[in-house]
Structure formats: structure tokens, C-alpha cells
Length: 337
Ligand SMILES: Nc1ncnc2c1ncn2[C@@H]1O[C@H](COP(=O)(O)OP(=O)(O)OP(=O)(O)O)[C@@H](O)[C@H]1O
Image 1 (cartoon, rainbow, N blue to C red):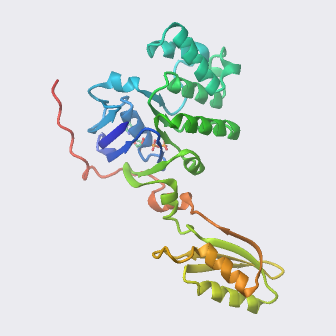
Image 2 (image 1 turned 30 degrees about the vertical axis):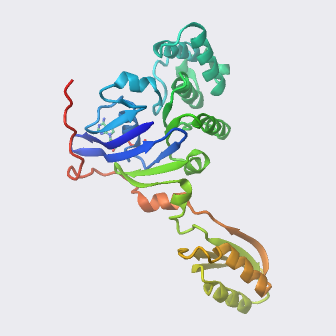
Image 3 (image 1 turned 90 degrees about the horizontal axis):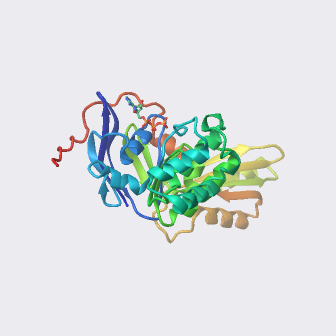
């Protein structure tokens, strides 16, 4: 439903988005991750046709965003960053206005506005000027206008920004519910959100894609992937030393960290070696079997899927200094009408 190839944006000599290509099929929620200034909002503005691209091509439901902008925008809902414009309007007037420009009339418009209001629980503030609303309600007005015409494609720039935990949960449920028959791109800084709602994540850094995979695949790149932490009570320090040696000797172990607590309680974190042979037992199982064989008094044991924040830090930079002007996709040839 969304096809993007070679998407590039320069601001003077600065390259904000650098030769980005990906596609999103129906039914997929794609998470767009990256540090501040990575190029997420700029990409979303180009995908939705609100910012001219320097090079590349974007097609939405078969419509070229640059040459067939209106048709592409009809199929899209867009939640930009920040609050909706027209702050002096009330949410109900704003949504009726959006329904009208989306071509909805009469009962269809009323039904669409009613459904969007219900889905974003805007009922209590419908008659209050948007400027006077809390950040969370402003965000929900933006969300309501994006979903109003039930678009096939939804592009949402930090949809849960400014929402309290209950509202975040509600919006994530709404995204999951809508995902079945839409292609959705969301940008977010909240890594739990990626695990909660995204089927796939793209990490973008300094305008380039640096990772593309399911949340599980990305977590698989973490040092913490399959790591096992266990707390064991030992009668003597010598027993703890022997246990550490045994843990280090397991086939699946890459390394072991040890933290001695009071009263003979020791925490071990056993990091997993890359599992090349799938017929060997997972590390958690190897550790559990060892603990049972040795008769350790295990107080707690858990395995981790991996840590997305660690993968994010590994792949991205915390700042976005000026990118070099070279090494950029060639500008697209002008297409004559
Ligand atoms: N109109 C503009 N003129 C010059 N530079 C711009 C313009 N718009 C964006 N940029 C620059 O492009 C880079 C990417 O910005 P963008 O807003 O896309 O980042 P982002 O990934 O959305 O960041 P954030 O997470 O902070 O929202 C930034 O360095 C930004 O300063």
C-alpha cells in the first residue's frame, strides 16, 4: 500500500533524509524510530505530500504522491507532530470542517465525525476552543481528524505524545484495531510502544535506515537476547564460586556477570552465545537443568527477549550533526506532464 524508493531531502547542504526505501503492506504497523533530528518527521511530511522531496518516489495505494497528490492524500490520514491548526475552533466544528473537505456530506459526515469522536473519546471537550484544551486532548483532536475518513493508509507522527498512560493504552488499542485493514506508519520515541503495537520497526539515524526488522528480530541483536538472570542462595562463598564456574562452562554461555548480595544470595546474569545449532537447548533450559542437577536453592530465574533500547543506542547517534553533502541519491529526473 505504501511504496517508497530513494526518498531524499536536502535543506541547502544538509541532508535530512538520505536515500530511504521501504514498503508497507496492508495489515502492517511500521514503527519509525530514531533519535531527535534523525529525519522521521521530514520523511512523514514527504510521504504525505506536505513537503517536496529532493529525490525519490512515494506511491500510496498506487498513486504517486508527487504527481497524483490529491488522489494519494484521499487515501491517507496524517497526524502531524504538535497540535492541530485552527486553535480558535472547537473540536466539533473542526471535525465537521475536516469531514467537508474530505468530501463527506449530511448523514455520512455526521456518522464519520461521531465515530472519530467516540474512538478518540473527545466527547467532554467538543465545544471548547482547541487552543484551551490540554495537550492530550489536542493530540486526540489531531488523531480524530486523521482517522475521520477511514483511510487505507495512516501516517502518525508520535501519536501518543502528551497522552497519559491510560490514554496511551487506549490509542495503542485503537491502532491495533485499525491495523487489520490499513497500512500504518507511526513514529515514536517510546520503545515499549514498538513492542506493543508494531509488526515491524525501522531505525533511522542521520537520515538513513540503519535497521529494519520485527521487534523480535531487533531484540535478537541485543547482548541481552536470551540472557538468563538467576538468584541463588549459597551456604558458602566457595559454593557460589563453583556455581559461577559451572555456569561459565555451559555450551550456551558467552559470559557471566555476578553480583553478591547479603546473606549468601548471589545474582548471576548469564549472557547467551550466538545459537548456531538449533538442536542445542536454549540457554534458559541449560541453566535450569544445571541448577536442578547441582541442587541449587534458586530464588528467581528469568530469561530476557533482548533490550530494544540497547540496540537503539548501539545503532544511533545522540546528536545529528550536519551530514556530508556527498553520497546522496541522485536527484530524480523531472517528469514532464
Ligand atoms: N525546514 C527545514 N530547514 C532546515 N532544516 C530542517 C528543516 N526541517 C527539518 N530540518 C532538519 O532536518 C533534520 C531532521 O528533522 P526531523 O524533524 O525530520 O527529525 P525527527 O527525526 O522527526 O526528530 P524528532 O524526533 O526531534 O521529532 C533536523 O536536523 C532538522 O533540524
